[in-house]
Length: 323
Image 1 (cartoon, helix red, strand yellow):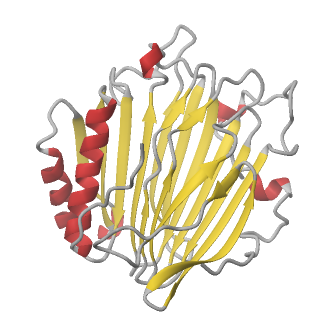
Image 2 (cartoon, helix red, strand yellow):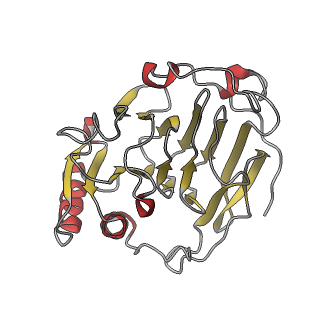
């Protein structure tokens, strides 16, 4: 592995608040702003930065740029997909064990031309109770020409009274393929904790290299003070405990065919609510599913990932060896 420092992804220094603070925080989250009685925004350990650059060298994808600031970090990429030995499997990790109040996290992932990368987290992202302020998590992923990238993190679990805004920006070359997943739970379900968080807000943007906006998916979940109200009705969680999404952007198959494959993959997973549609400009397709069994939802999402993978690159989804 050849790893060297990479330049900051923006024109301002890494530790300048303009780099790690979102340019815009939704009102639902911003209204909780305050001064913590513990470590404040910008203090050591409160700003997590991770910058990774991947390039194709020889017959496989290598990590060629790497900068990390605790609590965000990685171990070295692994190559254990038997169908795609060139695929760099990289686990995104946190030394903090979860997201705390006043945390500001930013991850920049650059996947160059012809690269093959799978990115995931080592475990679910736990968002802990917050008495002051809120937390933000920014992810900027760029896929160059003919790149094949999978960004499939484990679920986000918002604990009681937590407040999180996460923004994911996928900048995808027209000749690149990106599979991106997102799952959020209603809380610590095994403890009977459901929709006790203050607010979970998420924006996922798909853009072209020139900045053109292709698609925007906005989620705002804000339970009422008595717990559960405001997120349990139609057009929100509809009484379910798990919401998952999978976005498939690719020129390797017609968007309508990708949508059909996603429909077919979910057909054998009864008991779940799901919907599939094509993305603007026929750039791909996406699905969203709701359920109350975490294992059933995870199995359905994996089936969809596996089916799309077989369609686009002729290879099944690998065993990621997570316990």
